[in-house]
Image (cartoon, rainbow, N blue to C red; front, side):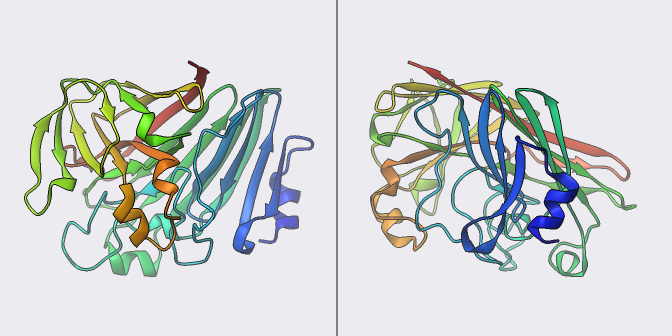
Length: 303
């Protein structure tokens, strides 16, 4: 559908419109009494959120991020599904699954009240996905924009066979200087250190998580509330997860950022990923006819 057709069906006067975004991809732009946001139907991805009065966006999207069909957009809140991380079967399929580089359908918009707007995106199996992963599925992403940002991913199994999945909301949070930011709420948690080399080390977190080298960790036994304190931007990001007991913290640091064509060499200072996931030992089974959800609510407050 064209932007005009999408606006005719889903636009909300003075609150929500569909425009042509970077790379010619459609973009849902929201501006209500409490916040503004940007949501991409391509990839089913939130790209921006700023509460009214905030000086900076909650999320990071780099200037060199790809905005083209078939490629993932680095930044915002990418959806990792139906596996998190490398292809679990070693078949050469895309890391973090395939739905983050496919177009989703804008299926609904709603002005919940004067300061809250909801956008719903959907995607289901087709011949191409079944060739990669042999299960029928229906995915729904509900994005709620108000004083806080809510993101809920719901998986439904319409087939006759149960399937297993890992998944994640791979949120990139903007930082003034990642080397000064700290992640709170993980003290005492066991984590798998994916930056430790071929043999992933298992460690226990002591104190807040800081960024002084590459950080790539899967934390287990995680509570529902985490926070990022960012003194460079003078703010705190609060993260409330739902149906998740694992969390990934990632920052590529200098060498990895330089090796990525879709990151600027200095972008490692500009974000830290704190990801609400079901990963590692937290594998989700979806029975025939059943549905499961993974969600997070993000809030900004001054330090």
